[in-house]
Amino acid sequence: MTTSVEQVRETVRSLLARGLTGQAVDALIAAGQGGHVTIGALTTPILGGGGGTTIDIAQPEGVINIGAQVCLIPVRIHVEAEVGIVVADDEVSQIIIGVDTENSQDGINQTTVVNEAVFNMRTDQGNSFAGMVSAWSAVTAALTTVPTLDIELARAQEIRNFGTAVAMNNVKFELLYEPKHPPLLVGGSNGMTLLLYWGGTVAMSAFAQVQFVTCPSSWVTGVDLL
Figure 1: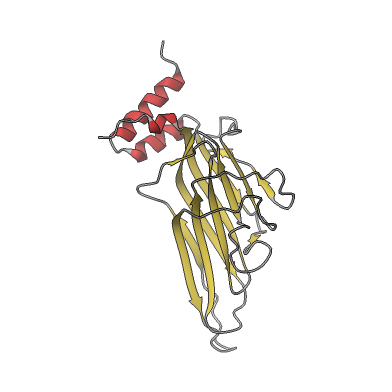
Figure 2 (figure 1 turned 90 degrees about the horizontal axis):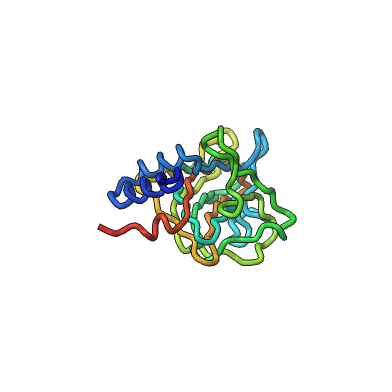
């Protein structure tokens, strides 16, 4: 008799083989394999730049660990920033969403980080992502393994000028990554990491919401290419 897991696997494999990634994502969410991580709490955002101001590759603001032999498909990532006071011309603000395709990170030894819960997008299911996906935020000391951004999924950047004391403008600065054709991030023997950064030449804080689906990597690597 075919089990429910086998049914979901064959459904997802069939949809991916036919290029119907969106439907495969919907099937995984319905099967309880969709995850949600919130970075920043209520009225308290995460300060950008790690322990400083400008983006530091070793101190990401958000980390989504992808375990070994796990496939993660990003569904929606939204970063909403609060940019500090501009005091000079040509101030730069940046948001970057990227991937280290070679390594996951060990947050257990990072005592400065905030461990974030990974919630199930099907709320009647338990948050059972242990061993597959973990998350944390607010890295303010260099990670043991400094990430390499092999892939930039999305970026927002702006240059802001000072103007005059009577003509200052507060503007909205955000990045919404909601891919029509999302990548299939397949973790190898060392896993993989989805990373969020924000910062600039002036102080900048932000909130983020990260949604994704997961499945064993064999569900993807076993798909016959058309």
